[in-house]
Image (cartoon, rainbow, N blue to C red):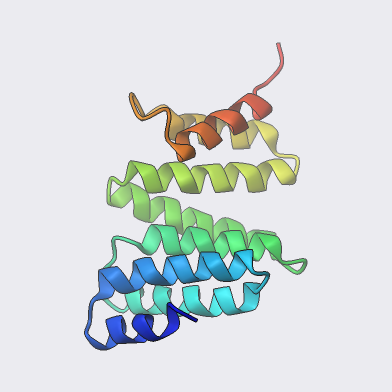
Amino acid sequence: EMLGAPLQSMRDRRQLLSFARAASALADGLVKQGQPAAALAVVDDAIAETESGAEGTELAELLRMRAEILMTLPSGDASSVEELLARSLDCARRQHALSWELKTSTTLARHLANQGRHDEAYRILLAAHGHFTEGFSTKDLQAAEQLLKALAPTP
């Protein structure tokens, strides 16, 4: 409730970078409250705003979030999830946004692992993780490392 009105105000004033970030925060909160349909609506709105030529620096994260939300739904379509994550990875790579690439690769690896595609998941995540030379205490890198350990092929 606290983010709804400011979100509209940001849009009205064309503060689109703030809008995309606030939409991400609102969607995350809605998912945590068990409202995935409302979260999807918020993310879809932010994606539409971003794809229409608005501030695009958050697009990779918004696409990843949409895929994450779909993964929580019982009717989540695996091919739609993979398509969104592929778009997110492409966007992150074009922007040279390593942190968005890592987050998306982690989500994709988790999705692939849930489908039994462990080797593919490991290779994708290892490639994204390999770009980093510092920051290993961050939440995203720690999550990636934990998943890599779980996916690592046994000798």
